[in-house]
Image 1 (cartoon, rainbow over the protein chains, first blue to last red):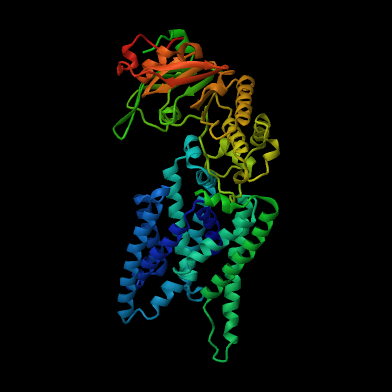
Image 2: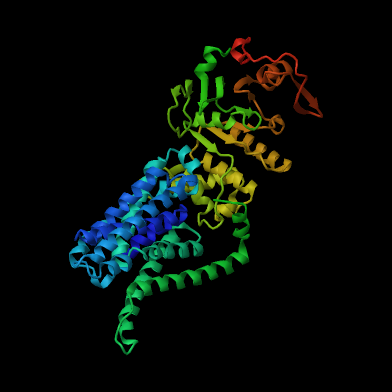
Length: 276
Length: 280
């Protein structure tokens, strides 16, 4: 369910050119998770709380305006990374927080407490519902803020709602794959799907497929890796999930490039003139 | 100040009265007065930076005014109005954006809507109708980012028309088009205005492509406006008062040129201090 949420939110994150903001929120979630670990609070609370606070801060500074976006994201990212370093240091120094650093940064689906699962399910369903309700104005404003505003789309409301959903999606995936690597699950499947699809609907379905495949293949490889080495030490789930995401991206990028060369003008020329 | 009769105002589709706009302390528009009736083709003419886009944004409800009123069908415009369609000056679409032309045009109907309802068949039919009206049927399944400039203009027009507006605003649609393409767009717009009884307000810095189809002109210069027919507005004495210095209006081979004249006495009085220039 987490990979489904990440894929759907990720599609719009890429469409809105907010991948950097998405990455920054993973680091903000890291600060929240580290703070939760220090306070002996459930990690999900920390990941979500940090992410939502970070999204609010970025929104307030100006992440929705293109020219202010990098500034807003960078400021929040810098502050969050500093806080994360502090909290992780204090947590590592604390006798009761063994292994918390590894869990916060890289997560582990095998160690998610069963008591967390109902919250994950409810939050995932909530994100999916909100995204479905705002999908049209969100897509419209992603295409052209000027046209969307002229047609009555409330840009600030839609943008803020999306930032909160992004923060929740990041928080949920941080539990499974860790805050550092949740960017891969957020952006990878979405970017791959958008390259390979001719419509947003198809891109969304493909992103979900890629995200779920990456997660389950990652779990399978991690489980199986226990038998790969004489030492009987398995490799992290997070590692395999990210590797599958990368392979998916490479394959679909090559396939998309081959198709584009056959049918459409190069998009590199467009980017060269500074299109947003 | 306006000479429009009360019956003209009552019948006006769009009525702009005494509008002032300032941005960051700078006066962009002062005492703007003009009206547009249903089905009229109006050229909003002025040089770059004259305030044409600002005026369009005022009509759209996207730009606050410091004074005056803007009414549509007699109701004051204070926010976006769905009976107004809009074609902006430029929209940069990512060539990789997987959005088809037909889906983008349909956003003109339901792109602002929240909720779970799916797109209706009636909307799809209207999309097909509007793509046909702008002669862009063959573009329906192409990516919006893969269109040429002229193709994109047509698609943006279809997007603006799909909600069946009473008034269509176009911001410099002829800029960066070759003369033949500009002629084609103007011809198309005139056909649409006639068949669908849509009033058109089209901004341009060169009025000549519009001369064959324009019912009236709204000329913007020096933060002021003069409106009326081409013959009434595009005259040396009217434009000289508007610019605040002498300009000559010259006709060469059927084309109108406005050229700077000798700088005699610079007249900085606002239009409203002169006999009214809004002549109907």
